[in-house]
Image (cartoon, rainbow, N blue to C red; front, side, top):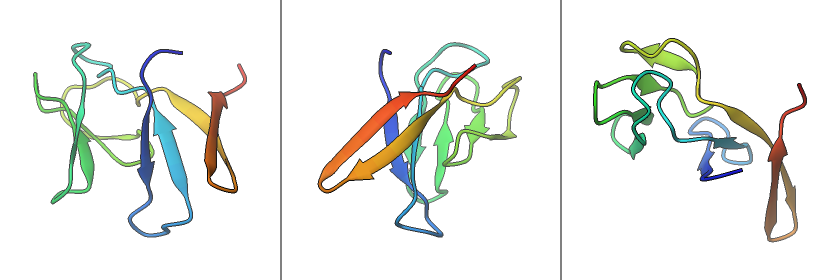
Length: 82
């Protein structure tokens, strides 16, 4: 599966998103920008929402997403079907 970033929704703290942090434009690893509540690529400034959707920059597609399930104090992550 590689590296996966987990992030809570700023609007709904019970919702957790899991994404592959590899920018779909340049292949760089995105970073979470706390102030802007976005993933930002350090190479060309592509911006992604907490769920991985593209919100700005040259990225052609969203960050790959994963299913997330919380069981007690564990977070389970698996690839989306398809």
